[in-house]
Image 1: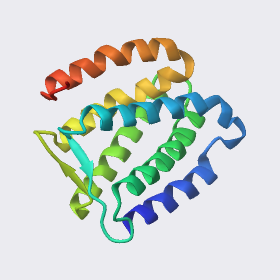
Image 2: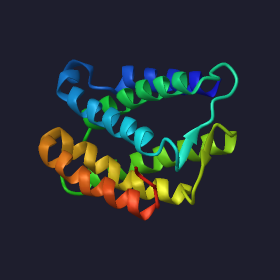
Image 3: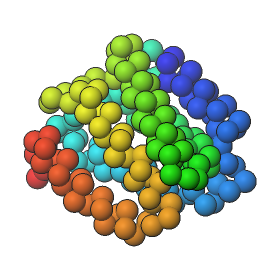
Image 4: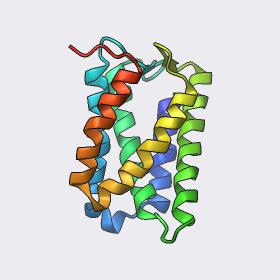
Length: 166
């Protein structure tokens, strides 16, 4: 049930605040977020750091991940579509999204539909979000650089979290 509520909330938020008229501008960045999410599931398949734990109406992990992808697209349309200019406003905007995503994750953990494994914590998620949101923004203007930076960042994160990659 929580997934349906979250999906509806993000969908209506994206309808209200998303930059739909310029969605093509954000399409590649949405795909970048999808790629990173799918890469996480691939690299940590046998050693997850966190996982969705579907319950109730959405009892299938594949459906939960599908809903997650819709939510990510809605998030990117709002996040990038309303990204402010200036020096301080972008930092505040990124901070808002870090707090928002971390708070949502904390709520999902509290509800029991999100689990941590192998030493991952909400603090690590917050730190990851501090890294992820600027990377999404960077992808909009410099996609090649973003992919080039993503490779060593991914390697470092795998190493720091002792993820065995075969």
